[in-house]
Length: 112
Length: 113
Image (tube, rainbow over all chains, first blue to last red; front, side, top):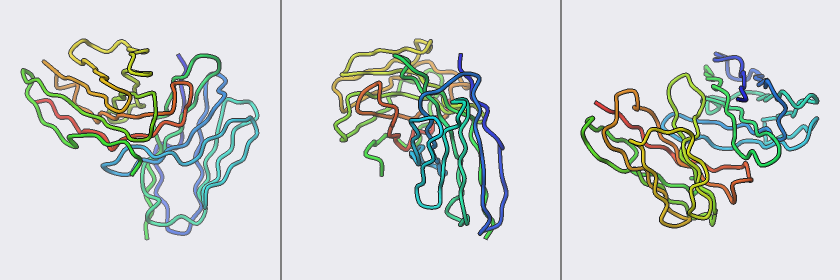
């Protein structure tokens, strides 16, 4: 089956720093999604990408759909304490395969 | 608030108990999902319902029994669970199964003792 490798597994940064994380796939995806999960909550969709090469922003967050369609990147600029949480990538293949494949997540800790 | 509500938020049950998890969405979505989230593992899709019909059972043991009485409600009936079934169970919905922008509930933290 499809697998996603998400890295890094965890990050400890100072408030104000920029953050980068990425996901790579063993196969091609047609859609990439990035979710954030805070403690005690379910994942919340941050950004959805539908086209290879697409670059999309949501406030201080920017995500890109890799040209090879096998990877995606999420950047957070000028981090703040409320950015703390687990960030998940998810991908969907083509055709009738509507199932999402999730990465294991990146745990982000921001020190004030 | 994503529009998907799960109850209870926390549940502790013995291996011989029978309990049910409930999920409700008022987003007008037609597809609903159950996911299992265990520590250090990716989210695992368990069941998919589309217009109240089950379209996916991802090799889930029969001690988990889903029920979807209508497009707004989804249940997960639990019986004779094992300690390794302890996890966060997440419900999600989307406009249709082909739509990948799923909205998740807050989850039920299940502990089997």
